[in-house]
Length: 308
Ligand SMILES: NC(=O)c1ccc[n+]([C@@H]2O[C@H](COP(=O)([O-])OP(=O)(O)OC[C@H]3O[C@@H](n4cnc5c(N)ncnc54)[C@H](OP(=O)(O)O)[C@@H]3O)[C@@H](O)[C@H]2O)c1
Image (cartoon, rainbow, N blue to C red; front, side):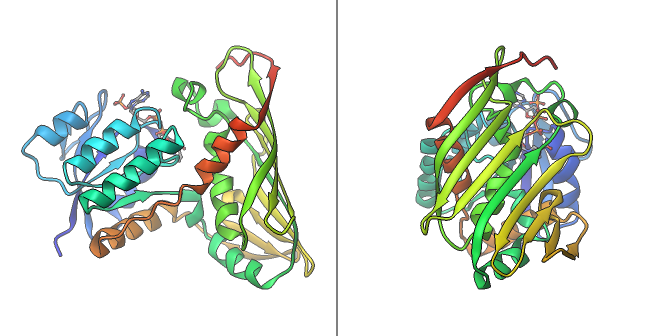
């Protein structure tokens, strides 16, 4: 099969930090075009936006949408209607209804839709999932605390409705927990801290219950300076199972089991190639459903104004 001719839409931070290198390192996919209003890349066709890209005579098979979630629906819809396979950065959209609409449209068009969750590709996630199938879980606690000024400088969209605020990183934790837990869970309480000058929360304290009644708690905070914390601690009758560093390290009963280099985005593109070849989609929206529930059930607290 010919390599997938891919276009990136939104040549910003994550496209440059991760997508370009991962595409380069992946067999079966070639970057042939970029659509971005303010950025260009050498040696590929460049367009201002996706409409110009789709109207041009440059042949592409797929697009990878690396823009902010607000507005992603229109881009994905245009690409699907043009018969292109679509890979979505996380979160897959700004609302629940729109991502289900995209799923339906991809099915009707007979093309691949891949709602990616890069954190699920971290090295400790699948081993933790396998281990937890065999253990007796007592409880789960997530701590996802980082410095927004360091990771998201000047990103206004992230504070706007649909930008998710602290759930932009927090949804990564939820993508891991929904993957490693052997049973489903649902939200029971949500405390959201909104800076008085922003439309999105800077911190969230969440409490979930599993179908069998186990407790899952999550503390998300964007005000952490110094060491950053991206940990998931699962207490089991047999001993603790702890994922740290965003899921790249695994500690079982106190002993380090896995410490691995970051391969998340290479894994995503390898899976995308597989999905396109198999004419399949991969659209698990459950992390976004939990985030939407957190807003639905959220008790709003107003905290100090945030200045970038
Ligand atoms: N940053 C990370 O570390 C990271 C990690 C994993 C996933 N992600 C996800 O990747 C997506 C993009 O994040 P990012 O950090 O790459 O964002 P970003 O750099 O702020 O935005 C990506 C690009 O999208 C284009 N864009 C189109 N419409 C835009 C709008 N209304 N506002 C701002 N930019 C717009 C911009 O390019 P033009 O101006 O050239 O059009 C921008 O450079 C998000 O869904 C995010 O959650 C980010």
